[in-house]
Image (cartoon, rainbow, N blue to C red; front, side, top):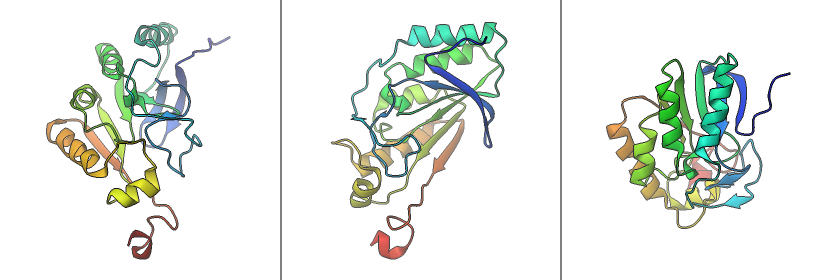
Length: 189
């Protein structure tokens, strides 16, 4: 019988990354956004507080166990049912994966905390960074992403631009188009 892991999930087949093992670093629906289109549902802990929500050493121990048992994946992805950059040690975990050398890494983020230098520095360790950007100004940001205060659209975008200037990996910008919110000029106006 395969072991049950607390922080690892999958691997799952991803059309963009092949076989991807997920790592969930925050409790379910702990996020800096409460987007109406979130596949994981309504955010139950809306926050921008960064901390070690789960022990990094336990995440790394589970990953080592999975590898010892012959785990296979094309990517190991920090994702899950919340915002992974809320975890203050996500960079430590990325670096631990990178030391294994046989796995590529991906960070799937909403991009909300990239205004913070510590988040940008830690994210540099990922092979792929995917962030979301579905708004175009503060008002649309409030309506679409419903972020934790004091998140500000302009600061978020500036942080993403700053990160992109230094980052040498693959950077994906994901845009969710939501009917009636950002799908036509009248909705944007």
